[in-house]
Amino acid sequence: MKTKTLKFTALALLPMAMFALSSCSSDKPEGERTSTTAYQAGVPGGIRVDTIKLTAKVTDINHVKREMSIETPEGYKSTVVAGPEVVNFEQIHVGDQIKATVTEELVVHLRKPGTPRTGGEAAVIALAPEGGKPGMVTAHTMEVTARVKAIDLKNHKATLEFPGGRTHTVAVRPDVDLTRAKIGQEVVVQTTETVALEVEKP
Image 1 (cartoon, rainbow, N blue to C red):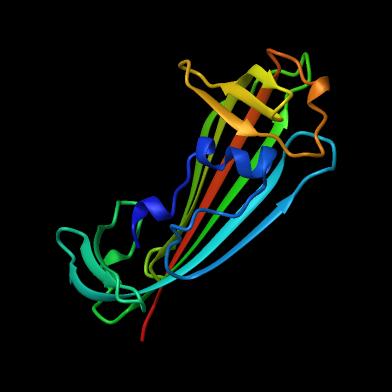
Image 2 (image 1 turned 135 degrees about the vertical axis):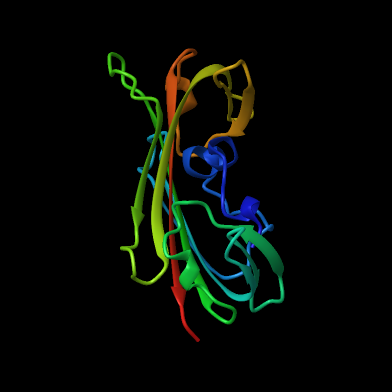
């Protein structure tokens, strides 16, 4: 249950929704995974939603340090530290089952001229009531705006420039007419990650 398998960067997911809508990396986490994509033919942009359901068993726990060792059904072992947002941590014991559902939604679209920017980050946390079953739900949204820096009509590719000067070249979907694209157009990349954690007794 590596953290890096649960989180994606907007740059890594960009080609999936905006252009290729290809399958995910072969580096998949343990658990049940589903992916859905949606886009309008001929229109740059789209939506991709990845959902990962993971389960792990608590094999050791330190309530003072808020640390617990977990093991997945596939045998992957890891030690994690529960932040203050995980309430009722003292109710978790060895043998308990941890269930996690991670949903990553990516929305990519061209910003219409004159539309104000709403970039930035936002987060929401819903905690379990005191005395209830340990668990939490968090949602984190991040928005990044890139600009079309170059257009390669021959190879049907576009180069995007992100804040800070970083560039990324991607293959554009075949149904998108690149002759209508313009240098300087703004591309909005918005990612929303929702994590739901629940602890169950054996």
